[in-house]
Image (tube, rainbow, N blue to C red; front, side, top):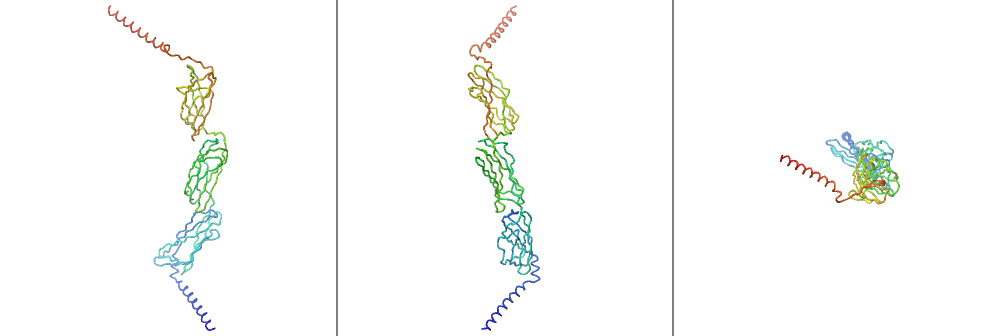
Length: 388
């Protein structure tokens, strides 16, 4: 029994001893030289730059520059306490042929604050020592920028206004799936959501939208995006307050003249745009107690740029009124209809009676008679002179 146990132990020792000798036999000067011609040719990160806590993928490319010798690797890994490996290392043997490139993919997470880090990539050769490489990784918590470029000085309940914003990427890497979103209580936004897509490093995209508020509120502007596969967002609040827009168009009536004939009043004047925006489709008409009459029930002035003016004429009838209101209507750049009223005094205007029939033809008839008499007199004078 003791003899058999001794034989078994001896056999185990011989087997392990033979295996150790076989392994060490691979480590030759030629294999060490071949391993020295293997190098890391490229390292890429996705995302290219991490936020703190971001997960991502690192691809390491290893090239065998030997022209006629393969190398065998049996353990590959990467990482440190800042760029931490979350996937399993490569523990199986892999053969890299002559002049071939082999890629190794790892999952990592950035457990560090802003800065540059150097996680170690290590590769073990079967027939030589290991290869070590410091793979540079960056952590930068700079977010996407959302800037309000232009907005109204004030908003009006129920009226549409346009807001212009800009989405910019100040990061060193591209970001994906960028979406701009508008929300808020008591508002209607068009469009409420805008898909921007990918935003390259240093790129900026203008975005505009309209908002119609039903109440004073806070407008919430949000940009969501992916850094690699990691979701991030930035939010800006814009207060919506009602008031007078200092930039809006401001049509004003001036140089008014009032005449009347046959019970029809005729008002002429100018409309001046004293505002800082264009007044579109400016019209002038009279309101009750005036009754608009042809030919100028409503007068279309057209578009008036800032500091521009246009003339108008309106005609109407009115019984026993001392003043009548003129209504100016115009549309702003958003298509909102705006109105303004101005009272015009019509009492004390000289009223001339408009007559029809023979009285209107009296002067033309007299003129014709005079011309005929002159012609007849001239003819008689000519005849008598010739007889002599």
